[in-house]
Image 1 (cartoon, helix red, strand yellow):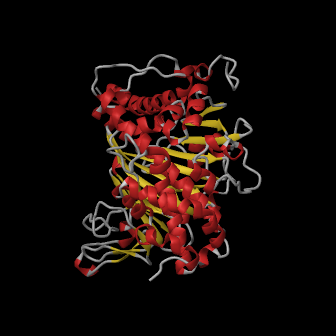
Image 2 (cartoon, chains in turn cyan, red):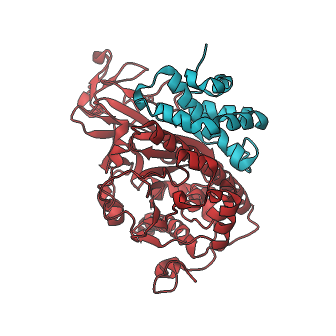
Length: 109
Length: 426
C-alpha cells in the first residue's frame, strides 16, 4: 500500500525506510544507513522538495491526512540526511565518536 | 582593527578589572575535593532552574527532578490554587522515594489528584499536606499536620521555575537574578511552546561546557565544516568578534551581530538551508514578536544575532534575533561529568513551511552541539593530565574568567564565616 500521496509516487521507494515519526528514529536510521543509500534518497527528494512543500501548504499543519503526514516526515528525513550529504561525507558528525545528544521531546507533527 | 569598539579600558577583560588578564588554572574543573565544595557553596545556595510553567499545564500536573549535585530528588507540582510548589521527594513515613515509575533514579511526570506512596500507601495533597495514613491508629501520637512533604523553596520568574534547597535562601529569586536578567521580562517565552528537548552525558566538568558556550572564538574553527568551504574560509579569515559582553552580579551575557544568510550568494549557504529557508540562526523568515523588552539586544546591534545569558550557576537562556530561544542546563554529576540538557523553543508553527524551517534549525542545533560536547571530553582529558598548569584566555573569553571567579567567590564566601566560627570556638 502506498504511504505517500499519489502525486509523489516517485518517492515511494524511500518511504518505508524514511517516513519515521520521531527524531531518534531518523537519527538512528541515518547512522545505520550507507552513504550511497542516503545520497540516492537526497538526490531523489531535493528536486521534489519544493513541490512537496507546496502540496503540504494546502493543508492545515494539525489536520494533515496520513499520506501528507508521511510526506512531511520524509521531508524531515531529507533534512536529517542533508548533513551527511552536504557537509560530512559520512553518517556521523566527524570527531563526535563518543558524543550523543538524545532528543526526548519534539513537536508533533 | 576591531569591527566593534572595545570599552575605554582597551579591552572587555580590562573593563572588568576584578577578572585580571593572567593565564588561568583549571584545577577547579578537575579536583574532586573542589567539586564537593561547589556542591555545598554554590548549588545548595543558589536558585536553580528546573523547568518552565508550561510543563505544568493543569492542576495536579507534576514532574520530578533528579538533582544529584545537591543529592536531592524534587517534586514540582501545580496546586489547586494554581501555585507551583516544590517538595523533597521523600515519604515522611520511612523515607521511601514518593514519586517514581519503574526506575527510582529516573525522572517522571504526569497528572494526579494526590501523591500516594508505593510502599505503605501514605497520601499527600498537592500542597504537600499528609492526608491519609494507612491504619493510622497503629501509630503513636501521630499528628498528621507535622508530617507533610518537606517543602523546597520555589519561585517563578517569566515562567521559569526555580528552586533553592537552602534552609533560608539569602536572596529572593528576583534579587538573585538582578536587573540584567529581569530586564528580559516581557519576552514571549510563554508563547514559545513548540519544544525540541535533548539530553546527554558529557565527560567533562560542567564549567568547561559553560565556557564553551560563553565564547564564540571557537565557532569559525570547530564548526568550520558545517558551512560551505567558501563561507568557512571567509569566516575563519575574519575571525569572530562580539559587540557586547555584560556582567551583572554572578550572571553574564554575550551578544553577537547577525548574518543575513538570505541575502548571501548561494555558494556561501548550504542547499538545504536555501530549500528550507533556515539554519543555525533559525528560520530565515522572521516572526513578529512585537516590541522586545529592554534587556534584549543590549548593544542595539543591527543586524543583531543572539544574546546568550548565562545565569549563575548552570542555566543559559539564549535568545536568537530570528524569534526563537534555547535553554541549556549543565547538571554536574561529578568533578568530570555532567548531564547536559538543551531545549529549543519556537512559536507553534501554523504552516507546514514554518514547521519545516523549525525542524532544520533544531537538527542544525544538534549537529553543532555534538561537536561542542565531544570536544569537551578532549579538553577535560587535557587539563586533567596535570602536565600543564595554566591556560591562556583572550578578550573574547572574558566570560569564562567570570564564571570560574564567581564560583570561587561563592566558595570563599560560604567557607569564610564557618572558618571564623571554628576559630572562635577553639
